[in-house]
Amino acid sequence: MWQLGTGEERARVAIVGCGGAGANVLRRVVAPPNALRIAINDAFPQSIADVPTRILVSGASLEGYASMDEKSVPQMETDEEKQISAALLDRDVVLIVGGLGGELGGWGMGLVGRVARILGDTTMALATIPFGLEGPIRRRLAETQLRLLQKRVDGVITFGNDPLLQVAKDLPMVKAFAALSAIIARPVSNLAMALARSDATPLRRMLVDVREWRYGMGVGREKHRCFVAVEEAYSSPWFTPLPEEIRHAIVLMSVPEPAEDEAEVLHEIRRRSPRAVLAWARLQPPPEDDRAVVQVFGGM
Ligand SMILES: Nc1nc2c(ncn2[C@@H]2O[C@H](COP(=O)(O)OP(=O)(O)OP(=O)(O)O)[C@@H](O)[C@H]2O)c(=O)[nH]1
Ligand SMILES: [Mg+2]
Image (cartoon, rainbow, N blue to C red):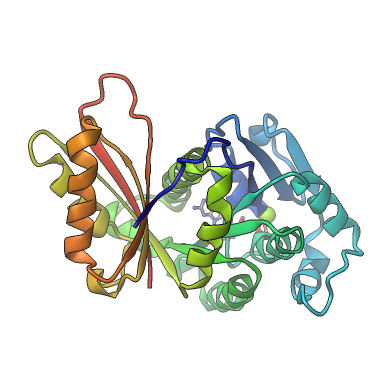
């Protein structure tokens, strides 16, 4: 078990949104001072006008560029790679968000992973899986993109769009996209906030040791707040692994009484996932907050 964020200097983080879904998450991300937001897309709607760095690309060539293995092709020749690398230049950790299944974001995330890895950064992608309703073609494309992404970044967390409909049944698709984008924005902001520079290397070692990551969040109040928050995080719709299968867990928590609550949250996680190596971080709770908020990234 180790605590994240204790090093003196904050990690220099880039939060990169790729494609339409990536942009929708990115505009909901509250970037802490140590993080930069970067959008990569073929067009920039007014809704992301406040994202400071925007890189215009065309979807057509991204698959080919993203497919280049960084070991066999370590030099960056294309304009897209040069622009991405200029934007990422002084970063330690790169968090990449986007939707799998489209023409741009799914490949774009892989290309950002390639460039960030050449630059020596620690990389993590948070990617959505299309709704079943979107059809088998999208689903298959998403699977191909996911396999490539897993090779290009240190860790991938997937968020299925379908499980969202289990929690919010009659949600129209546009509302469901917005809801999921808001859900993904939280771990992105909070992870960026939590990391110190000294975490980048041990975090990478942890990320690469895992095939698939899943995310869950829970909130508890009053006496049993820690138990309730952990229970809810473990029963989140995207948190599909069996608790005892989890080998690594990243835990972000904001609790009213750190001295007792943090130990209790970690104890509740240990009880469910006894084999897991835990990396945990304390988030500053909002003033007067009496809730325990627990986010778990579980690695299988
Ligand atoms: N959570 C969420 N998912 C989205 C959103 N928009 C699209 N998606 C999902 O992400 C997948 C990719 O869609 P986009 O990101 O719009 O596609 P793109 O990468 O920009 O590529 P194009 O198809 O060329 O527009 C879709 O199949 C949806 O499953 C969104 O706003 N929020
Ligand atoms: Mg698009």
